[in-house]
Image (cartoon, rainbow, N blue to C red; front, side, top):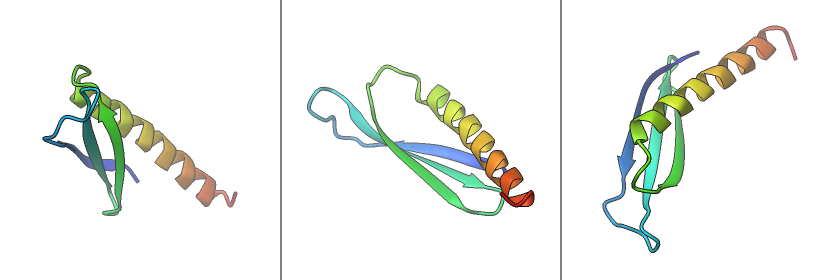
Length: 72
């Protein structure tokens, strides 16, 4: 399984402290959807965060699939 698409949505309302809620959505090759929510600082590049998390999720999915195939 690999991540085939990813996107994010940022809440329009600024929270106390200046951040905004972001919900990232990832879809794998089987159609399963994964989400992650975090408080964005308004500065960090969200596309970079999205790419990094997609890569981490791909690694975790590959590890889980390998463990399943070998019966662990």
